[in-house]
Image (cartoon, rainbow, N blue to C red):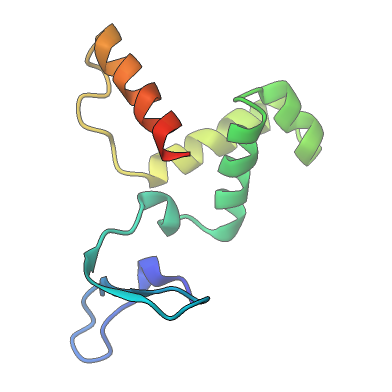
Length: 110
């Protein structure tokens, strides 16, 4: 089931994730958990984005992996991007310290 599109059977509103359970030891956490906008993409588009990241954004590599032309890769990425919400301040200049902080946080998460 695609949980990002789950609707309440009673009122037809979107539902949210409220419980996470470890499949190994059954420890559970309850609360309100956000679902990534990427989870709202189709499985095929999630795979496309995953491969794009794994090839470091190389459109030439995407051509080879999927056996499609460069314009098709660009059009597919544009189509996927249009499905996602705009990031606030995307056009704003990001300072070097913010960039460094972001890369430090991602290294700590791994």
